[in-house]
Image 1: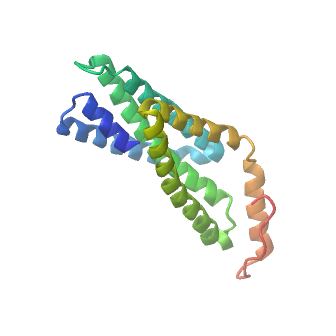
Image 2: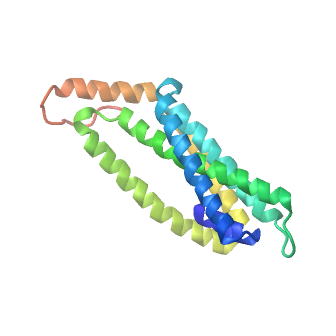
Amino acid sequence: MIYFLGLISDDLGNTLGRTIVFALEIALTAGIASALVAKYQDRVGHLRTVRFFLLVWVVATAGLAGIKALMPEAGEPGMGLTVAFWVVAGLVGVGLGGIGTSSRAVVGAFSPAARAGEFFGVWGSVYKLSTIVGVLAFGQVRNALGLPASLLILAGCFGAGLVLLRFVDERAGIEAAEAAEAGAGPGAPPTGSAPGA
């Protein structure tokens, strides 16, 4: 997303200095979102927080697609697109900081203490694999359909994540982690997987 923000920033005729300001905006909004999520997520709910940030990603990617689609082939893009780009850059920052913090918290909530390393290890491996596969797939779709269409498909993927999260029972996951932790006892080696963990 940051890479494509840079491309669109160039298309808008922004200087390197202004593009760096956009990058700083992303970093700042990501930091603020991370801090707010860390402070309030337990009150709001882990999965509700993840859903919110997936929705932010849907809006940000669709907005980025709209900006690119509306950009003229030649001439000045106009102030409206530039302002929209500033807004979308802020949303990307909020999405980056928020989804990273909230998704780690979900893994932590669903992990028995004795098996936290195992759970986070699997999650980290899947996370890194999805980064590689996702970027390669996105590049192929972009080459075949163009940037606006590929960004809309990406927005659809975030939307699919929202739908799939409806099948995750947060309370059951936390209870399964607590039951597995209580069953292991202090210092006992981890046993088989807890149901629903």
